[in-house]
Length: 254
Image 1 (cartoon, rainbow, N blue to C red):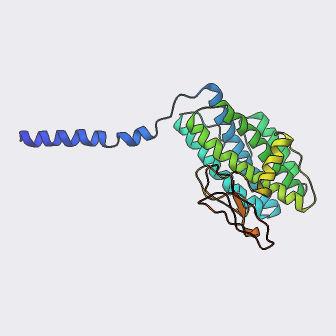
Image 2 (cartoon, one colour):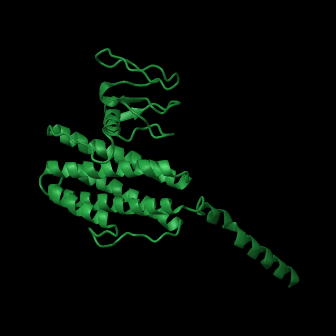
């Protein structure tokens, strides 16, 4: 009997510690500052705004670009929600469609819906405005934090917003319209758009670009992209040469 009690005690101790590493995995990296908390709550509602505006525009105009991007925004919103839960913050998310805690975002939503209902071109412009705003806020939030959780999520969201901004800008260019940024600088906007046209930064540690029809070479700087339609393939071993395309031109990985 004594041996049985001892055995049961050992099992109890083992079971109580077996899941300790899992609990530690979900422990916040460190306490958030008030500014970092405010930033998370802002992005939670901005992602909701983007998702709901694009959902409305897709129902109105039935254009694939809104459908594709709204799915991405839903994932982004879930990522921010996970951090809000992790850091035990009060979620500002309203289950009511088109309703926001922030008066500024509520007004922004109303204005964007009104604009986007005007025409398909206006809807693309409204989308570009949302991504313009998101990039501006994410640039600021990334610069203001050293928290690894926030840096990882904000970096991912910022990369997505840049891709979405390029997508809306492409639609506007096809109808010979130009988008002028309202939140980020003209230089920042031009750099984002140029990245899509001439090859740009790959996501760190990845081998595929997340924009357009490009593929990336995995090199030291994560910067070499070759467009599929020009048939340029990077030499990943040397990171310095690409095969000629059909017209005999060469572009190299740096």
